Amino acid sequence: MDYSADLTRAHKKISESSPAYRKLAPGIDFPAVVEYIKDLDEMFREIVLPHFDYEDDKLFQEILPLGGPDLILLVEKFKKEHKEMKEKLERVIEISARLWADPAAPQKDKDDLASLCNELIQDLIDHAREEDEKIFPLLRKNL
Ligand SMILES: [Fe+2]
Ligand SMILES: [Fe+2]
Image (cartoon, rainbow, N blue to C red; front, side, top):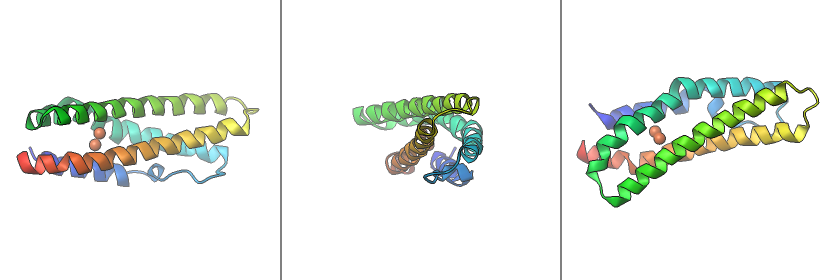
């Protein structure tokens, strides 16, 4: 199996998969945020979370024997980031449901939710970039 081609495809698919990959503009109104979160959730469930599982269960296991202690630490870091992004997504969904059910929800809570969405997207961008930089060269050399 060509892991590096596989990973390139998956990362490309993530970056092109949805308008939700773009960040929310400041001041966007709440119904638009809810619509955005629906897209974001869909993108994660259909593409991003299965990709995390694939990396956790398969790819990282395959590459671990190719490196030393540094690679073990790097893989631990990536796995931790997967877990943190999953938790952040759950928080986004939970807060969104709560705010949507409360017409009197303060604007600040809505703005905080928009910031959390943007944080999640930035986390995903940074994470994929670091994997590209550190995992791809290893795959090309060894697998
Ligand atoms: Fe990853
Ligand atoms: Fe990845």
